Length: 92
Image 1 (cartoon, one colour):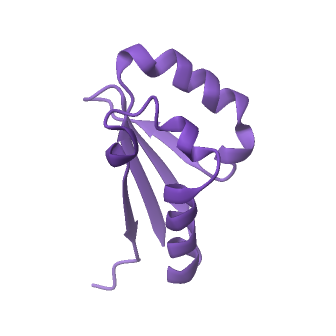
Image 2 (image 1 turned 180 degrees about the vertical axis):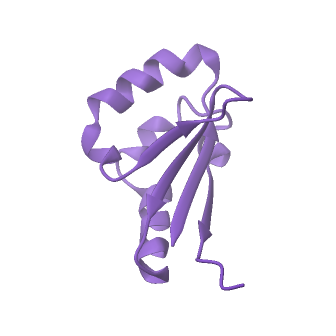
Image 3 (image 1 turned 180 degrees about the horizontal axis):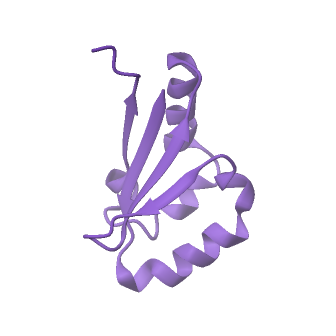
């Protein structure tokens, strides 16, 4: 299973957001961060989960978790600007 967290970091917030990410490496352990090449500032976090329960727990922690709330000050739309999707392997 894969959990995608997507949000927009406006250009004016990029430096502060990047400094915060760098200063909090424990929050990003096991997470792949990527930026959209066609739309700079559109960020996606890619997180892997072993099963649906783990994915649900990851999503809950991501939405409600301690230090993540600090991040919303840099996200376009604040907490409402965070979009999360869970994908399971395609069975055809």
